[in-house]
Image (cartoon, one colour):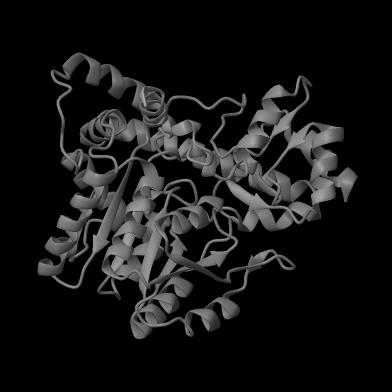
Length: 411
């Protein structure tokens, strides 16, 4: 009898993990590695001195270095010397940072201030995730329509929230231009209440931006169809300039009752690892805006509780300073000029690269096969995304012509 009781006790005292199939994480499926992150690792491991990295999506100077902007470094020094607490700021983050960005995004003459809500987020990715969470909370059956191709992480973020993603035509690879007529035909078929994801400027990965007339036409269709636009504004200032890069967005918003804007300070402030962003939501009226604000705050609280403060504090200090703000603006203009110069030099060097001069921002897609892209990596030590996307800002005056000759050698 005693032996029987001991066996029963032993069974119940055994760890659950010893039971066949009871381990929780054993049920997980291995996820595929991110192709771009894998490419970065390959490039770092490559010991060839002539390697050229046009895969990673960061701005580089003419020495191939991603610098800390002078205004950012000065703001950090000021922050260290004056910050007297590390206490929580709350789920909305730095309110002054959020407010200081508004005239940069919306201009100085917008009339819908009382219809805007939003908060600071951990980068543009955090803003997008919160946007999709908000949409799902409002209507879990909403579909998110995105232009093809788009930033690779857009699809993953939409899927992670549990919403359905549907593509529409945007870029015509044969002509290396926007397929605007096909895009408009697709937008006119989208169901009322669905969301349309748009790139505010410096389209990633194509570099092909909408004209102001095209923004106007899209706004008219969105308003007529009752669609919700989500404008991803991640590269403001790197196309034609701060104001110029936001004009299409502003034209769109002037026509609409509702919209979501997701913003990133990664590129135009060089704050990649600081995770500094914001989400702005335009609602039909002030009452709805207040309801949206309560939902955004609740969702943020349950997701990250409070966004990291360091990057937002730096941006706030820069934008509030009569000295640092002009310094930052000048540095940003120099970055934009460098990208444009690289584009123009590529276009002038060979007809194959000519379309790049008409495109904007850091990225373009080269019409290369996967075999050609592999040959460039193996034979020439040139690293680019599997899609053929290249980062123009990854080139320097020293690597420009070797890059051109290498690409021509595989055509």
